Length: 149
Image (tube, rainbow, N blue to C red):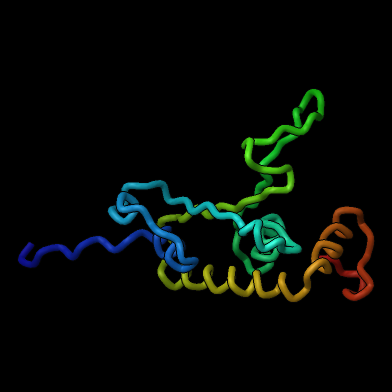
């Protein structure tokens, strides 16, 4: 080519990390990493919601983000096991798989959706857990005219 190629832009996983104030590794900036961003809510904040709640609210905004607890049940004995020694059974995290089709505009929308999700969950507090647990049990929440999220 007549002109030198522009340097590659950082992958969108770095954009997402930058948006939440985290460092992106030098190898990731050079596109030498898995296209996955994993995060967890700060446990010191003692929030009334967890990453599973974040997953559900983001799904309402048409984003599929996987939320996980850091424990699992033994399939044969139903015994609870922790994945890590320094976590509790309530510890959760979420991950975002950054697909090749993710544009800068979509990444920006995802960041905005995460911000709005956290704002929403901070506003409704324990109310979201009550609505969500009602959906699991089939009970209807009175403030939603019988419709449960």
